[in-house]
Amino acid sequence: MAPEAEAEDVLAELRRLRAGVPLLSGALVAGIDGLVLAHDTPDVALERVAALTAAALGVATRMTEATGRGGFGELLVRGESGCIASYAAGPSAVLTLLAEEGADVAALHLEGRRAGDRIGELIDAARRRAARTAPPALVPGQQPRSQPPQPSGQQPPRPPQSGPLPDPLPDPQSDPLSPRP
Image (cartoon, rainbow, N blue to C red; front, side):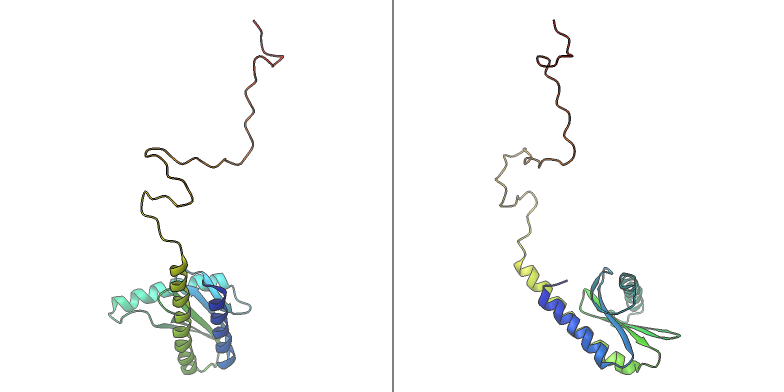
């Protein structure tokens, strides 16, 4: 996701949420690709929840676009023993909260929206910082500076391949089994 400082800030935000919202049993941040970025969620299949969050985000985004309701903001799913709420966390992540039955949904929304905004800011700042420190992208045909320029039409040397070495061809002069003239 981001350098260690941002990862710790996101985790601190998740812990603050868990401590401040009664009956909140878990919180996780997933990328829109469905990968877990951070979590404070015991006893849950994290990768599965993150992947389902990304899938739900895709459906919710299509619904809001198809009905002219703008971009994705939040999603609430109620089950028999609690609810799952997902909030946009910037353009590249989603915050998902797991609440037990009886949780104050208004408080969950209030804190979830605020935390989603804050986490989105942290992730976006980390991505901008990483983009500034990343080496520049190569133009097609350009070679990295670590390789000497190759004459046009020649390929750079290939690195050696791993695996067993082929048997050397026998030298007819030194091979005792080789027929001699």
